[in-house]
Length: 202
Image (tube, rainbow, N blue to C red; front, top):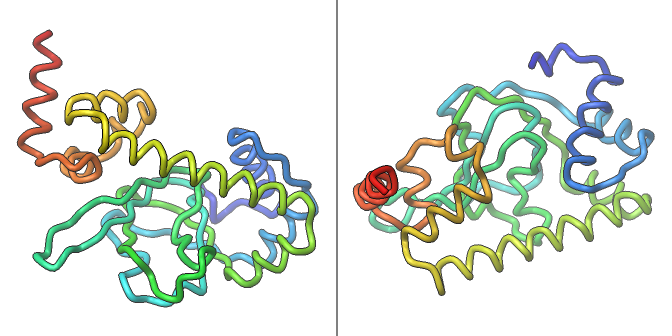
């Protein structure tokens, strides 16, 4: 998808496609305001969008590709927090009151990302009923995701967490490197390989 070559009308249509898929309805005039205030960038595979400790002035929406957020612990271990495919928001810490990035952000595929200032979006939310409703929906989705993650670590074993991940994110299972899925699930890559092998044998 050549997002950078799209005109404003096509970009609005693409955003409407993303929001409709999430059960969200935003008027064309509001989406037009967002597009007008945004910048677009192609991020190469493996390129870092932001690092832990960076300021949180900007947020992004992945228009094409997939982005990963991850922590680096004191021992230098890379631990995946989550994956952001097309139509989803990335670099969202600023919305929740954080002045510094909590995680690293990198592109797992060549990705086109729409960047927009967090304060600009907050201003649009304050002036738009559509965006206020959308913000509530996004907060509800974030809470559901948090509960899903907690449930997995509290009541599921490693194999069950992997099965749940494949059911919930079937496309990501094919696009994301196994090592990143393993750290997302709290499983050593070797253990996940054994789980996958055992499942194929059944």
